[in-house]
Image 1 (tube, helix red, strand yellow):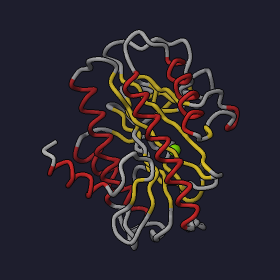
Image 2: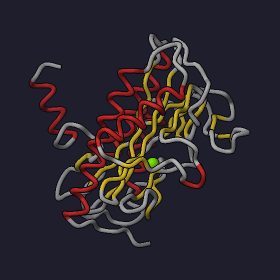
Image 3: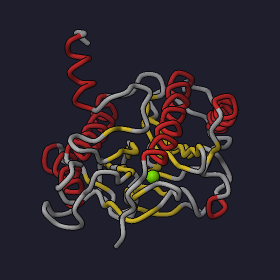
Image 4: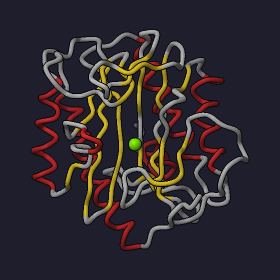
Amino acid sequence: MSIMIKSNQEIAAMRQAGRILATVLETLKSQVRPGMKTKELDIITTKELEKLGAKPSFKGYRGFPANLCVSVNDEIVHGIPGERVLHQGDIVSLDLGTIVMGFQGDAAVTVPVGKVNSAAKHLMETTKGALEAGIRAARPGARLGDISAAIQDYAEEKNGYRVVREYTGHGIGREMHEEPQIPNFGSPGSGPVLKKGMTLALEPMVNTGGCSTRLADDHWTVLTADGSLSAHFEHTILITDAEPEILTTIETGSLCQRKRLSRSRGQ
Ligand code: MG
């Protein structure tokens, strides 16, 4: 397996793709509301990307018909935006890919539609926490399995949910999907060694019920087989000398630096 090491120039392009992506996701988060059709989110995405100067990467990928994936409640990933109306209490996963100067960013968030119940809230917080646990494990000299194990441990052992097996995170760069595949489960100490300059998209998909999935009749939307709720969080990160840099963010700096900053601000 060959995992590419990115040059500084390539990383600069990915940083820009990531910052624009994060900006669009923030806009979408602020616009999500009950009564809205999911296709409205795709329309906003298209406009914002054009305004900010990044190309969308999902439309046309193996024939996917939209710029944004919108997956509601028991939909895990790859939902096609359309006529579906969002209701108070739904949770909605927004997954977006961008390209700047030929290099990609990929990120996702799950957000509440209006007021949601505590079970939905806990699932979203846990899935975000699982992503952060994976990011913290992504240090030079560690192995890929350390990331997978950290995500699984957080979601399954610590919080009693199940991670999806059939869909994984991935290397990313000039291509949206590069080597390696990054499962959200695995053994610490296994797999390739992480090196400075690798760029990876980590993306835990976490279900309140079982981990089995099914494909909808549209051949895209992936749902939980048992109808349980699912959440999805994703960041594109860069392996550095120390803690990883999150590329799909508006803020600069690492996760730990930001946490320290927000603590000192009393947030
Ligand atoms: Mg991805």
